[in-house]
Length: 270
Image (cartoon, rainbow, N blue to C red; front, side, top):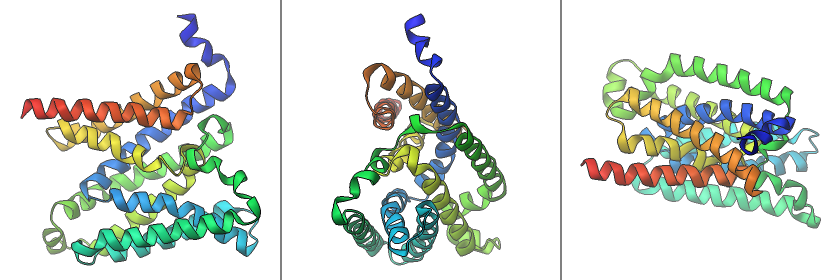
């Protein structure tokens, strides 16, 4: 037993554990709506835009590139949202073009002069580097997310089910979708330092997708999504400590295993 609790003696592990307790349910809640609205490609493109946001800050000489990253992500999200309202046949292609162009521009600027090394940690993130002050900020973000969720969930759910019906009920579809896109952009950009550009979308999608495989109603859908996300997050952190593997990828591996288990279990029930 002592072998499995020795990791708790280290302050950075405790900070990472508390951060995961906040980040995983946060991503699980957002992920359910992303999966419902078929926005997986949208959120993936949004995560990739982080590099361009940093690059814009570097070009403009901004001391805090996190600010430029957030501002660019919000603009990028609103632009992608506008594009996604076009015909379904071309939406994925257009978003792919914008995403590819965005990340290419970011990489080109940041790699100039061989300086990309100091930004490479953003690709996989480093949850172990989080501080107590940053955990406090995460708590504030989590509280804001819950408030937004309570106020906008029914409207977002109505839009995901039937936009025409939602519009007939007086729901301002474009406004709600834009608010969700902006909120998602803020959460992704503020978490990217610890989660990583390459895997942040997986942490958003996998728990919700796993839950959808077995949930029979909306309550179970959200409950299982949070449970799967927190379980893979906490177990991934502990396993990464003993195996000396990056925490983010380990969490995604566990989340992927859960997805395939629920997928085959759901097929068996059918």
